[in-house]
Each structure stands twice: as structure tokens, then as C-alpha cells.
Image (cartoon, rainbow, N blue to C red; front, side, top):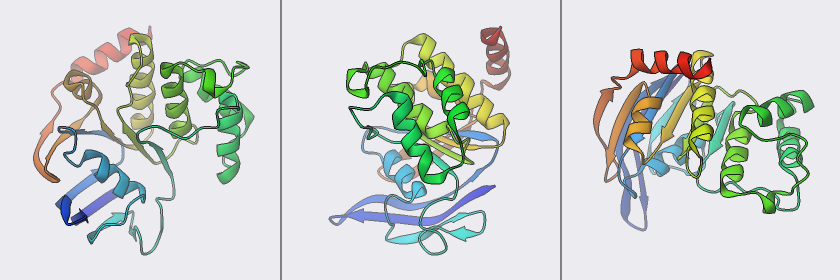
Length: 228
């Protein structure tokens, strides 16, 4: 699978938010977006998700033009800003409701995903009683539970302790190894480098640099050590 973005531009109230973005994302890789707040990282992720309509340019997902052939990517999991969950539902009930839309997974997969992110599938607490870290874990669970081809995460380790961050790393590496395209933004430069295979620098809505992360061998060793 490929996401091919060509000359993408987005303007809001005459202010350029994305300027002539051209980039390709391929399956089996984790891509980090690095930039200051307001640089355009989140808007680029929103555009790929089909949540905003660009003024010009194209987003081609495996031969289908977003906004023309398809309204949204066919298989995508998203965590951008604060996810909307029902406060009077448990974590399991919230995911069950979301899963009923596509009907791709059932109870076993939901329970497995909750456990994978470090939440108890049988926890009877409602979402409004969750801590910030628990809410973040549930948001990640919602994004990954259907094992989508594309995963887009804005600040995935926000509000997580070290054990939670470790779980996220393991989940993302597993998804990558299974062929997903993962695009994420993280304000923690060290964490971004640890997670990513490639990093794109964004400033003022433009891609200003690209680097291949230097961690790969060390990361794999750490991955193996942490999983033991």
C-alpha cells in the first residue's frame, strides 16, 4: 500500500496551512512528523484522514483519490486530539459501539485490544471516571482495534507513564511489522526518533526536511529486551 500526496495545499481564512506538500508513505513503516505547534502536522494528518478538504493537490491511496473516488481511506485508525467517547459508557461499551459501524471485529478482538493497551476489559467504571492516561489508552485502542492498513496518531504517548509508553511502542512496531502505514506526531524528539523509521520536518505548512531514523538496530534490540 502507498499514500502518495502531490502538491497538497490548504488555506483557512486566507492563511496558508499546508503549502505544496508532496510526500509518499509506504506500508510497513512508521513515519514521524516533527515540527512546532501550528506547523501543519495535525492538518496534514487530518487531510490524510479525509477530515478536511484541501484547496488543491491530491491524496492517492492505493490508486484511489481521496475526496473523489473515496471520501475516507477504506481502512484507517485515527487518534487526533481528544477522541469523543460517551462518558456514561465503559471503555468496552464505547469500543463495542464503534466496532458496530464496520462490523469487522467482535467481542474477542475488543477485549484483546483493551488488554493490549493495558486496560481491563471487565472494568465497570464509565469513561468519565477514567484518568487522563486511561482515556489515552482507550483512544489508542479505538485506533488500532480493527488492525487498519493506515494508523494516524497525534501525540500517542501523551499522559502515559513509562509502562504505557512501552505498550504503545510494542503495539506500533507490531502493526508496522504486519504491514500498516503508521504516521505519528510527537513533541518528544527522543520518543519520535525511537518510534519512527523516517522523520519529516514540517514548518509553516511545508516539508522542510527528511531523515531516516538512526535508531533501527538499537531499537530492535531494545524491543526484544523489553518484551522479555
